[in-house]
Amino acid sequence: MKKSLALIVFLFFVGLGNQANATDQLFLHNGDSITLKNKQTTGDPVEFQIYSISTKSRIYYIGDGCGGTTITVNNSDGWVTKACSGGMVTINIVEKGTKDDDSDVVIRYDQNQVVASNIKGADNSKKGQKCSVCGKKLEW
Image (cartoon, rainbow, N blue to C red; front, side):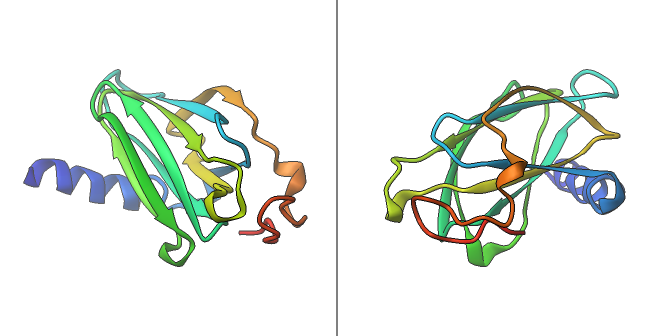
């Protein structure tokens, strides 16, 4: 456990701690998703960050090293860092499409560390606009 925690802390400072290589993807709808695969050795952890524009957002992520996990990220949490061992993770947006259950989120990853694929529904062109469901301004 201590080894895993130390690895995650190390990856944060080496990986996403350097925001110059960060790529952001905006997701607005139920079922939007992205798969991230480590560019390095197969099985190395994949690190990503989540920012909830909505008051709270539900995210489901699955990978060989982290199973399947649903989390709730609150806007007040700021950027939340997650890591999944196993070399690959798929992140899905979960929402019901109501004002109180809207999940507008930004997924951030280091393009030098991971390759993004199977991107469904990402729409960075909406940045700065108002969400048609919850009315929040889509900014981060």
